[in-house]
Image (cartoon, rainbow, N blue to C red; front, side, top):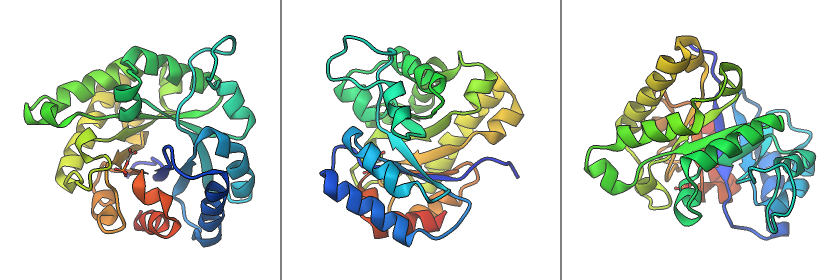
Length: 252
Ligand code: PGA
């Protein structure tokens, strides 16, 4: 067996006001059972400091931002730097989410710059990739995901790459209630791992955590997570409710 980490990350997206976010974080802290699974809360920027404080006592509970800017600092009105994120206790940054790619036109090149900035600041990228429905229907899903992974990550040194978590999120499964079948998830995860093996070697490929995202729920998490190349999940909607989120963590 590999020594890769199991990770369940919540992505709150643009939900919850400040107090609601703190309440959710407190509920997770109160009910989380000890385990080896790394549990990550991906909160909106303004929640980060408050949530960081709430989760600070719990070892395997980590904090993620949902985006960052690719420059160090300067005249970028409305943006947030990796130094700022690190200074409020962020451990991870979710990058290249399909909503960022689609609504904010983030390219593989921009995401690559953000990955590097995140690593330079001492945080770990959760790098998202995944195809739209027409791409899968045309049979081009592996080709597209390969391009995202290669252009987004493969100019990193092996040492930097070893810090990256990959999340495969088929766009047609995000927020739709339609989940990829465990077979579809396994097939793509194995494919992504084979790309990593080709470029960085088997050892690093076996040590890379690859998460599945897209309508993960308490009812389907166990079957998805039991696939050999699925090392956890990136959870949107179901992470907004502490009981559902913790049921998914328990399924790991
Ligand atoms: P979902 O979102 O679980 O609501 O489908 C997943 C994600 O976008 O990360």
